[in-house]
Image (cartoon, rainbow, N blue to C red; front, side):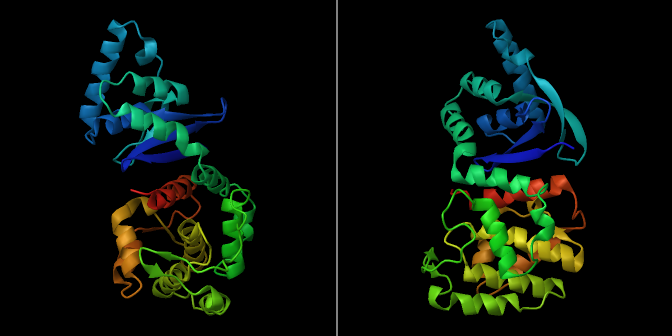
Length: 291
């Protein structure tokens, strides 16, 4: 099965597919053309790529003729053969792009996988094939710590450890470290019989924010595991807009209706689908990227 990944540059998708035989990622050419032009229209991006290939050919640059093809999911949900380039070719393409957006794109493209988040995301992908996924204590604090330790082990010295310091974000103070063990114990005991109860438990865990860093990425996996066990469902995170999600989670402290609506409308029964899991990881990490 193919490993498909979605990267985000300026809130636009750059799809990638893993080539097992050659051990490398291939990136969608039209997606890169789209982000460099700030254009979402598929036909316009395709036409621009045709123009750019002709321009490169006139300059005796063979870049336009070295594309490979892999199947990627199109906007209509069908898999179609798409032009792709590898890491070095994408950098070369960006360098030959006739506008001033190539420099920030190249900086993002070459740096993203070497950051802590990039390395953690790679570990998150591997979780699908890991035996840990089937052995996590679903809905428990221990299970949450297992997920966090897996995602951030070797990256943070506090991986898998409940925080002992107070933290806040945007002026909001999360659960006091002094009473955090008791708070988490109460959350663990919350019922998981239906969607509302599961979402309430997820919201309370977000308010608790048990780790110094990595709470959102950890609790979203934790939530999906609870939904999978209790309802045979999970969240298709690609259906939830980043700004809508962040706003709804912020509001959930006093009103949970918006986040419940977002999650409810994004539920799917594809609980064992590899691409659904990978896409969920892509969006989960995307939610945490700073603007």
